[in-house]
Image 1 (spheres, rainbow, N blue to C red):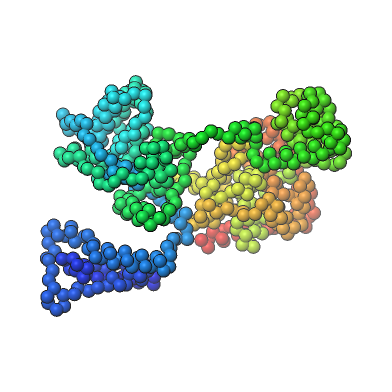
Image 2 (image 1 turned 90 degrees about the horizontal axis):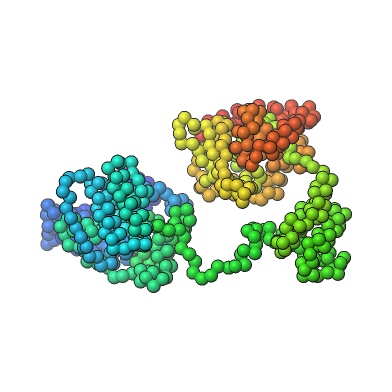
Length: 610
């Protein structure tokens, strides 16, 4: 099967051609042809070449490659890399995130265990025959008792080669009642001595305590102490952090990974870690390592504002400073030195100036906030300025986003599907059925779609929102569920095989608005905010749609992520009262409804192709 593929090669050689005592004909399958020089038959055609018969224990020895073969192989590989350079798969990020089932071994644990000197402290026999997991857990309890006698008020790292014991000790509980009793004893001893236990996995073949348990001596160090371990002992953890960043290895690959690292270090090659630090997991027994040196105290002056807000308020303050000097002959330092009543009067005058100049009320409100950031004692001490702002708001024309009717959504979906704009169709459906804001749509990636694995609920999916609007006052992460069966099946098919970091829409808000305008113009529908449809109409239209389908404001409030029911009721009352489709001319209505009736058929046709 491998040989039949066009990009695969099978090279045949005899082990005796590379100095082995055994003949052992071998076939090597590779996907490149640079190893063709390894094809060497047995040189014993003259009759002077003899082989050792392959029997008994020699079968194990024959599994090892001869040294001459390894040298020749390495030489060919080195020359090939220097010629074409290292070739990595195009989807290297996906390979790094591949399934890590069975990967437990860490490279820095290998180096630490293999280079350290170990001493047998105590050993004992079990008086009865227990299950192996019970014996392992009892051995851990014995070790903990020894630790708490010798040390208190400290943290201890324990290396275990039993995954069952490691998991139970790390969680503090187990599904097995026999293990739970032992874990209770361990917890009692650690609490009494104030000892914090950290656990990590060490392979049995490297475990120093495995030898004495089999009546063998404690093994000697297999390698010199690595540089990163010496540096870590002196307080420099850079090398340790780099090794800790590499992916976990399987048993069959861990020694090769260490060999590759040692070769790279000898050649002066810097290898980047395969993963970044995950703050939700942390290091063993702790969170992120504290950064050396003092913190930047100036970060507290921003009051937690994002950089965009700080830049915007500085720009508004600059305009206020110019007005202050031209109209009052005051410097900004003089203004900040005034008491709250005089500053309030000046800000009120500035608000009147902005109102007369037809500037936005948002500019005025942000200018007040910027001044309060510099004089925190003025907070709640500027009634005239804020009263001007609220009166300004009452005089401004108020409008809400027009709710998109379900028929209009289906018509837009039909247009997108017919034009093969599948990403646009996904964006419209997720925004409508998920009641997403435009900013949340723009940040959406494939990894944010979570499909229900339960076979009874395959017609629903969850949309994860990484940066919700109210993340500073509410949850920092939110999600919404979509229950429309046809659209969920369409989304599942369209996202199958895509990279998880793929962004649904690569443009900004103006690009999204322009795309929306093109779809609306196809049906001669207005796209002016307040009177027509905009990307924000997807959220209000979805809220109206789900309210009419479920007749439950609590359902809409929860999945729409409104902070309270009062604001939702006002929102739905105004959105549901909008008769956008009924206000359109009769030909436009007929065209929209005709296109809407085609959407189910187009979806089924598209799904049938996959």
